[in-house]
Image (cartoon, rainbow over all chains, first blue to last red):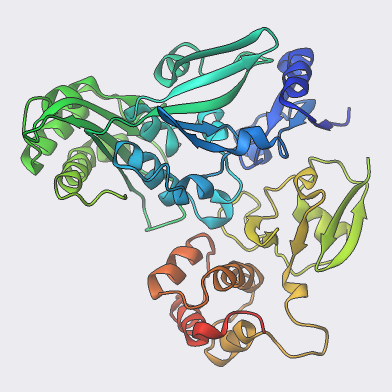
Length: 286
Length: 156
């Protein structure tokens, strides 16, 4: 049977169509993941609902924090002044360093979150470290939950549900950075990626910390051990290295064609150290 | 469902499945074979075209996402029997192409860069090229060609 592709005229129509199609349907954003279904041995869905043109999903708004529409692309995120503030600059850095221009111009924030399985997703660790929440819309209404919860409970959204916005807090005492290691400088998936977000007290000590790992395990996730190693200390490379060693000790790294598991674990401490040193030097993207 | 878009300033339409790749429609239906099928999985950049002036991979773009948009391919850079664009000429002058497989994608990527940033730095040129694999030139001559254009821009 031919695939049906429907351009949604409104968000309500998109959600209604997705609810009707159930497991046989999916939203279509930039298409870079769906068009590679064959590569993952997946069958295409029978129905796709095109979200392009829904302008409400393409906005980046500032208020209490920053609210990012589901259809905002990596390119738009990377050059947004609203996202290049210290509290969430990890997200801007992840957007700017992910893939390459011809992917960043179409790949969206919600697509990066919903792609599964996708250990190398760049935005997801940055969003996790920055305490992102997702606003999910269904035919019955909207709900909001931490991205971490969504990823733990539901690697995929249930049929008929879609992300409408990603919400990021922007506390004044928060700094963040993202760093990735790939087999060449650009254009490749990361072998390991790291996002670090820190809340500093007035003396510059770390009050609270979140460290997220990408590409190391099957899914990006926060590392409690790494965060604990940073809390209560001044920002130094040594402390960053300790945090990295704690992260490596508690992770179950994956083998891949790009890198074996042992390598991901071995390189992780240095990448976290470098990221912390960059934050200490005030070098994260602003 | 008929889909309409503009290809190199010319209105075109296609009855193809909306999930068919733009690359396949360009090459096999509209017979525009400048954009090259390289890896087919979004890694090599040989199929790079411009969609509303932004570089995209035609192999990963469903046709439906081109609907109503302006698509530009390497065929649209220089008129038939007309002068090459400064970027095309610079690539020739600097030996920035050998086998030619990557060249249409490289040209479209760099055209977008030069239209956005008239005098890019070497770093910006290399960052822009990060999604275009070239097995022949080692990139140096491509980068040199792009930098030689300077403020003149890709199009005149």
